[in-house]
Length: 96
Image (cartoon, rainbow, N blue to C red):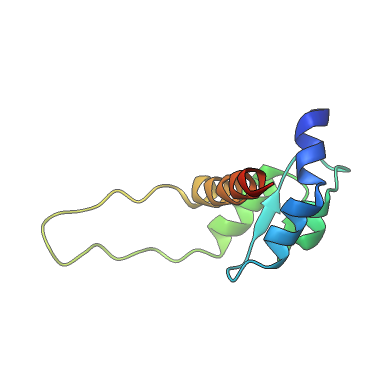
């Protein structure tokens, strides 16, 4: 993992933000062997993004379509999880 990215994920600010989150935070941030403070603070941590995606896929339920004729497109869950994590990191960086 890039040194600058690793430094952000090892920052106390990011770790504190994840620890104080009222929603579960799942991480899958790199490669086997990369462990960050973000991983340690997370509710669940996976060695790779692929492992995280596999876990989410295995534990997701199909979302029934809305009763109306208008159907919404629901993004794939792994992208949602990664997007939420990136928003948490961005919020922590802005506060710092």
